[in-house]
Length: 108
Image 1 (cartoon, rainbow, N blue to C red):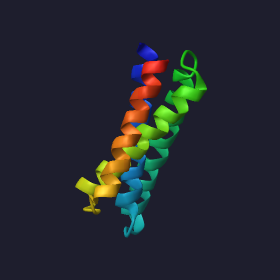
Image 2: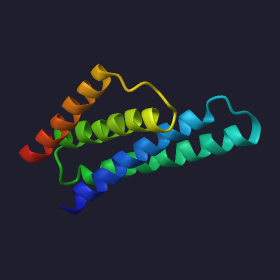
Image 3: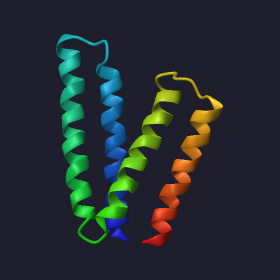
Image 4: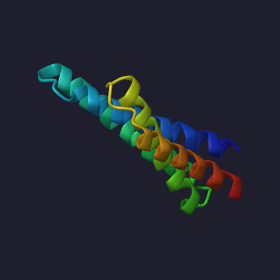
């Protein structure tokens, strides 16, 4: 159970580093470097936590769950923070992705 929590935190770190990329966009100088440094930190932390989680969770399950959390989180951050469009099809496929993640967790 603990490695599932680690995997979820790794996925949230992935969401965090995509947020940092969005914030760095259009920045310059010190502000850009600050966001890129935070991006790099979260990127490494996400990968290390993913590696830790795969010690007990099969890689064929852990990796898709990790990327799924990142993808869902990036879309949600894009919609609510960066004001990207929330179209029907975007939300439809986001819902199917969430269902797939739940399915993988259930089967493991």
